[in-house]
Length: 453
Figure 1: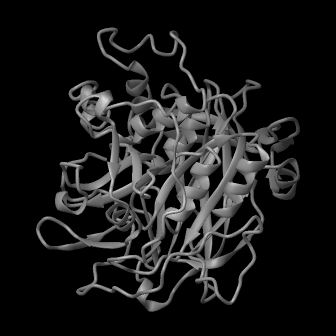
Figure 2 (figure 1 turned 60 degrees about the vertical axis):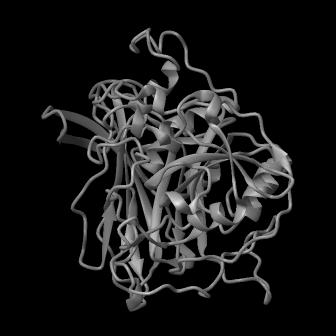
């Protein structure tokens, strides 16, 4: 989203409460390698992650026309179509007939009955193919949701326009762009379990197929809070990450979220992708005006753009874009403290975090925002956050150091006061994690410690 302080288009939390809730339950402690273990001393966990990504996972679902694919990066692909379907693209008006097949996950019972669920996926969709991800939940009262569309996605934008789907609700929960949210968490209603369904599409009469390597969802029940407990500094380390300013792209390609001033998410994604060695070819960048600096940021904006949301800040679309680069995977999750981020940084894994604040809440930022993405690339000896903040006037100014206590609070809280004094939502620790498809043992341990495999 843009760094400007304005009403957010993403509404993912319950209606605002009237008074602060300081002293509510604190964030989950970072777990050890076995992230399913609970102890009497540990705070209640607030996040549940589940991903299907192994050959056994793909064989374990319900396939209708799909097949599990073995190899170094197991996946699921279209084999024999289950049928054909017509799709009229709402953003182009174009209608076409597609062959399709489906894969449905087993039921996953959430260890943390959730007020919110966010799906994410990693896939390849060659020209002439695309995919749809749906989620069907069961509430704690035994009733169920409809099949909600969590995204219609392709690597490119020639066959369909990647899109979220608005106006999905059953009176108990609603899909807000990329997040399924219980309408009234105060009622006690929670999503207790869910299934995910993939539909893979291709042009009729071809042998083309999407291949999905990773499919999962993050369910969470983060307590409402204006402030969060402070974590103690535990690491001094900085990763060497490229720096890209969104501001130098102001006015470029306004068809993608009004141009570069709003490109915090793709700029952050491109920083971390290139940290891991991901590079775009001259052929891929040939469409960009050669007079523009850092054409890869323009490319990231185009290929993360959600035509319904009308922005580049769709969280799963950014994770899916990262995974189009060789050897990378991406997930959307929530973390519980800066200790979790320190665990990742220690293993060489930077993060992209989502936060919102008024200018005086983050010393040195120089702006306020209703929603902004930046990277976390390290910590100083005093424990302060070293960020790659794309809301900078140039690439050299992207590296920022923010006060630990201020930064942790604006990232982890779920409620805040905006510049007008109105109570609005916060992101509750949302982040994107990009990491190797074949992580090292140390990287696997760090990911497991924050609940990701």
